[in-house]
Image 1: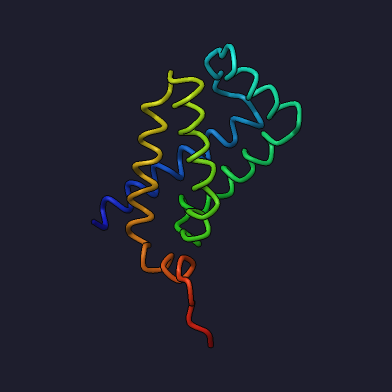
Image 2: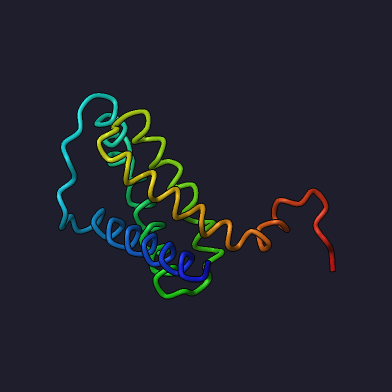
Amino acid sequence: MKIAVMLARIFLGAVFFVFGLNGFFVFIQPPPMSGEAANFMGILISSGMLYVVKAVEVAGGLLLLLNRYPLLAITLLTPVAVTIFLFHFFLDPQLLPMAILIIAALGVLIYAYWEHFQVVLSNNPARK
């Protein structure tokens, strides 16, 4: 299990760090989009929200690569990963396999750290 967690952490860290930086410096050209997918991305870009998402990706990816504050990184990246999956599931299935890999790797990390998340999900967390 330790090897699976390490591989998932490095994979997610690299994906989010590289593609997060790509949002700022565009060293990998994204595939062309059309229809609703292009409209969605256009709104993210014109509103400036894409830069917020990319900054979260860079920060979360770097934390995972450095193996520092993994719970914070998982918490930051989970909504981004779910949005990526839903975007590719509903609007642009071209990269859906990559989105599924991201969700699977995130699932491995959530499973590995589940005991730490139980406090957040508890109805009556212990008080000090």
